[in-house]
Length: 570
Image (tube, rainbow, N blue to C red; front, top):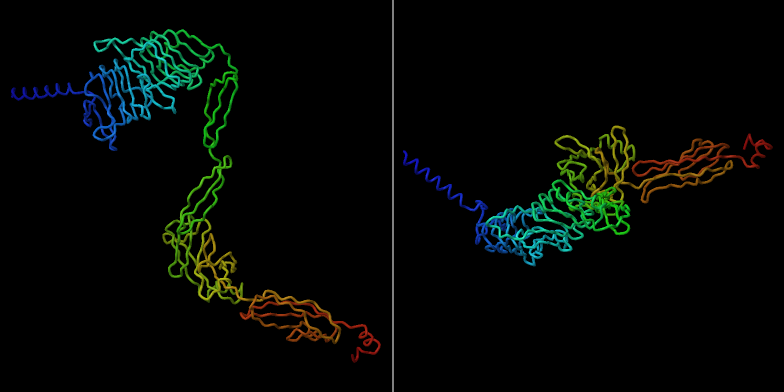
């Protein structure tokens, strides 16, 4: 039993010792290439995650490993590599650590130089310092080598900002520290806009820093802990005046900057003017204060885009059952035109009659239609007959359904009914038959591709009617006759071309004025009579017109009546 326990204890102890000497930067998924630890993404790109030894002096990162591109250096990849003095970065690297943070070379106390392939599109080195082209040719300092021997560092003129932790030091002189001279002075260029979080934290040797007045016109702040524990910082040289300095927000953890002696390098007094650049529908505007003399700006505030003010959507191209449509709307402010595609039209069809309902969003997609043709003895036929006389017609009761329940559209849809056999397409019209009120309402319709088409937003009974040549109106002129004289009525009959009809006449007082079948009138007595002309077409539809005909004596006839006792015999 004791021997068994001793063996188990020995195995466990051996495992612990072996694990303790393995590199701490590795993981189960990491691979090794000449000491470099790396991982391969699903897309085949390689990320460098560390090095197998902290004592390496020089690292040259390859552009590819086994034919796969090396594109990234992971956060903390080389942290604690105390022996590292130089790193070479290829053009393929487009990502180093976490954006905005220098967190790849922490505690690399002896790192003197970082070099970058000149064809790298994202990173570059300037005098051994790593920069990121974050602002269109204006580099941002991403990592300052902690072992760089310079006592003074002057930024490039076009540098725009500083990453968080870029100069951060946690160096403790030891057997691994080669005793480099620590950085004592930093000069930030005019035009630099921001200093990142903890950028200079722990720079114990830093004694002075020159800050441009552009800091007060950019982000208007020195970030939290930017100069934390810079215990020997005694002098701050500021390129602006005291007014500008007081406008800078110095966040917490920067006591060394606050307590340092300030040297204001400008005595210029600003004359401020408030400027407003109005935003557009899609672009930001801004308002700020600008000095009339020197052009310096401060208190910049972004103004959000106003957004478009669109009108109603208008149809540019009507959709069909085979093609999408298109609509557009125009912004009233900037005249930008927005377009959108509309769905193809859907069709609900009745197989027996061929009647179709063409719709877009007025019905649900699973809508069906049932159609029944009305018989000649139905009430709908009587309504048509009462309204239009004897005509050629076909009547359909059209009913949409969804889930076996009657439904109505939520807007106008197109109805297509096959043109009935024998109907003249040029003489067809459509009526909505209101069975409840006994009326027929003529609605707009057209004939296209063998279908009678019309629009409706309510389904019921519809009649297709062929217009027959008919008599429209009968006009008669009033007339006056002398006693015992005759004349012919002046009659105008308005009828469609091809209309077949008969004409008849009647007199309300035939004993006074008579009329024959040809419209000849005769005055049989003195008086007034209504003459009616009735025109009847071949379908039995009649149209009538009336006129008044008067009969009177002439002067000679009056003499005969009075002087010659004509009242007896004349």
